[in-house]
Length: 179
View 1 (cartoon, rainbow, N blue to C red):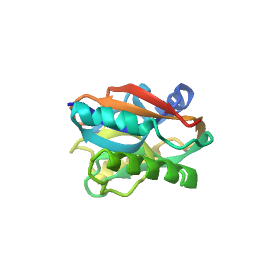
View 2: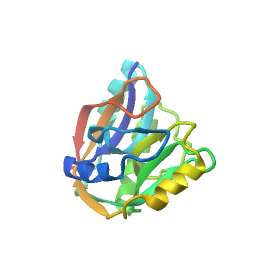
View 3: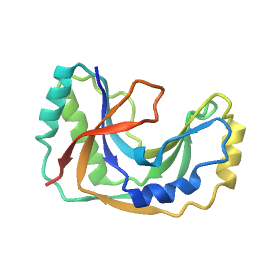
């Protein structure tokens, strides 16, 4: 049963720049730069027949122009129980529209609706229990100044992940160009 999600791959030159923010946070399990991406829709563990349906549905995506993605800063998910360090993605109507289309296509294949609000980001690290709120606050206050990063994407990638606690490695199963 594959674990699948759709996303936008981060190009190598941007991944290299993001590596500057990895390190110095106790309890962090750093994501390999080759696995950096912006998740559009987590599909979960699906049967092979559903995976085939997902591929077919993604092949029917609307035509759209390339999309510019802008990374604007660092953040932590989890508040009092920090669970991830990420680079935030600037709000963009075209990105929101693309994610909404991914949601519609996933639902059409019988996958349950996503309950979480779409918060576009690139995960830099998964955090273990010893990454305290104090340690994460200290990390954010001492991290290098975040220089905004911009890249253009022209396709959605269907990724698979091995069963784990997250963080890769991820495999690009299929790509779906915008045009």
